[in-house]
Image (tube, rainbow, N blue to C red):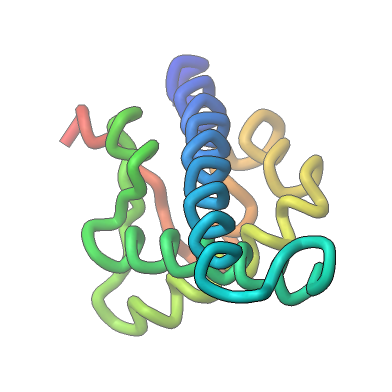
Length: 133
């Protein structure tokens, strides 16, 4: 794995953050407009709905095609085995959430460890470069 590949993984991570912010704006507007739930009165419920919307986006994207929008833009793909595919997508999402809390352990593994995200190593999934295959 070259520096170019590692840079593409981190750029994909930042691009995914921008997509998540847009998704959260859309979901927040919809929830506030349609219901009485908002961030000031129902803080934890509102945060849970935003987290759940992110989970649905990621799990469906990984399950159907192995790529999110940012992964398509940066030409990388998640290789999932056909057996237990949905379970692995859900497990990967929960490990990614834990990884965001423990950023240096999970995401710095790319630079100093196995050149792969720690949560992918834990569940035995690989991210591959689509341009090569």
